[in-house]
Image (cartoon, rainbow, N blue to C red; front, side, top):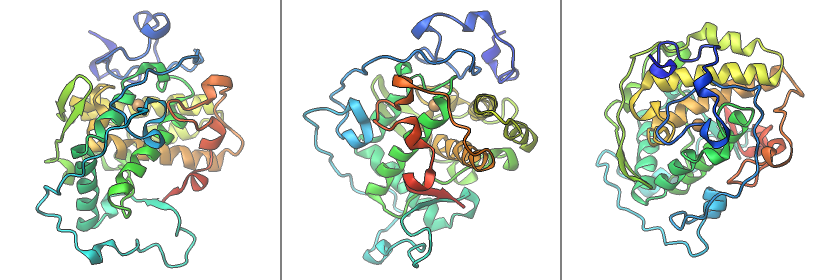
Length: 318
Ligand SMILES: [Cu+2]
């Protein structure tokens, strides 16, 4: 039985089979989430391949095509969402308060029905424009070394930001909600029927789930991760908690190349990022030990230093 079967996922043990060499070690295509190993620092020097499917350098970084295909806006298919001009008034936070310029990421349980449909509608629209697939594909390229080492948290912080920017291009009131799975111990019910088909580089992928075949980390597991005083100890524990969340949802979420096709991926990672932000406040000056090329969040240009301050990046958690 493999350690990747789920039940023992996140164990601290090291499987020799999992410690191969170079690009073989991290998530091979289709590979499940594996235990983080922060003792092996990223060996990071590469140029990601150019791929003409990627149209926009702000979102797709070095994957962007020099001759971008034009976005083809797609009519809204969701009949539950009927945009009217008055829907596009500024978000309610524009009241002169401190959050005016920030995307305010909320607990998904606090979303109104309208905010839920806006999130799903924006998700469907960027998918229909074939702007989502290329973003998902970036996650399948292990060359970015975004799992199992200190790049995990800063890299996914930028990844979420790019997704949020894409969503906001469709609907500027949308921010990525977070899914506090350790507290809820349940899948967000309003996402159950939402299983989009996303065009990935290997062809269309329809989201599947196999919810609850393993254990979801509880609040104590998150508290135990939070109790670590050094970045690597904290981040490694939190990545393990995160892995178990992927395995618990199962299906697309259980596999690195397909996980971001499920909207719950973004909400799961928003929660992981929120926990990191909390830990940062409690542990000032504790930053990822990254230098040189490993400190650049390729395919984007942000450096590790630029990932530290979420307010400076333009979002906050409430
Ligand atoms: Cu990831």
